[in-house]
Image 1: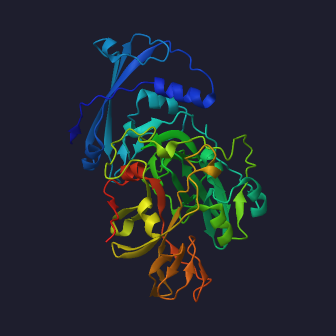
Image 2 (image 1 turned 60 degrees about the vertical axis):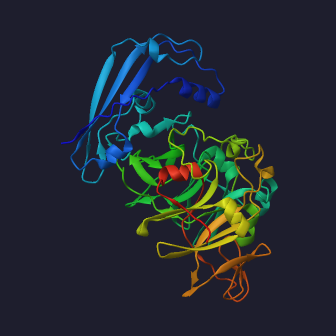
Image 3 (image 1 turned 120 degrees about the vertical axis):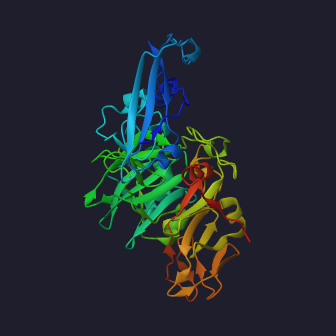
Length: 456
């Protein structure tokens, strides 16, 4: 047995959570009547990963009383009594599946989640990585019975440049506007009998879509109110497993270590969606909730220097809030990021990663959902997409000419949704490769070994 105990103490103050919750509810926090300082000796993530099957890892949680704080002043650890008022040592064992067995939640996290039916004994991450986002579980409500507008109706309230998540399954296309997703983050939907979950985490600018089915069950998802690496942690309402939105991985609970299936989606302008799918429908503002749809609750967020609620180390290879197009090719162990500002200059990148040919498209005309107070007048950040360039056995090479995407082999014109709209290949569609449009800090936190594409 290997016993690991890292003596690095982390101070956690409940005041930040109280203030965040007050900001969401519009009320002033009550002054605390008592306070404690929690210190935890926890193994590092690398120590967890290095532990072999059956190895024992220990986590020591100590609580120490301190004098009552005043107003919003955080407890002063220098005034704590010399001896802890309580001490708890939790033993964690890694099983054959690489799952950590043992509940070493901090008292703060435990107080937020004690009423949940999540199996906290099973987890793939250290609980020290989890932060509260402020609102409680389902405090940001998911949309579970979505209704849809025709494009004519949606055009009354949705500007042509506003970003939407475009999803097409077996010929049926739907658009999910970010002006709605910024307020709800999750839509549980079904397209052509395929149950899907459409997600958006504003703090990471990550718009991702998954299949809601797992081993014969159809899950409904909600927001947990928790974050990891600033990213949304979802939960399913059947097993109450916690799922990481960025990766689709179960991280805590019965299904820890399991993986949701990504589905192709593209973040484009409403205009791009309408031109590609004239019969497509748009998620309606009639959600059953009273929200200021169209107004950005994160105004100015994409121009800050430091991300919000991110406790990790920033990867200095790019600015934290730089926009990147990302691809993970798990079969060949490749993670790669393409800087959007570089892509905007050339329009198209033809590439090969790990033996996989791919092409990255860029078109202007899509506004940021996280810039100006009104999304419709926000900065143009463009839209991106990634495809397999091989069609019917022929590898195509793409260029941009006069803002049109053209393949060199046939001279056909293509749109951002991978459709040939003119020329010999008109009517053909490229096969999408799962990709993301993220802020650099979040991608690098989850994929620290990622490479950054460099033009030749």
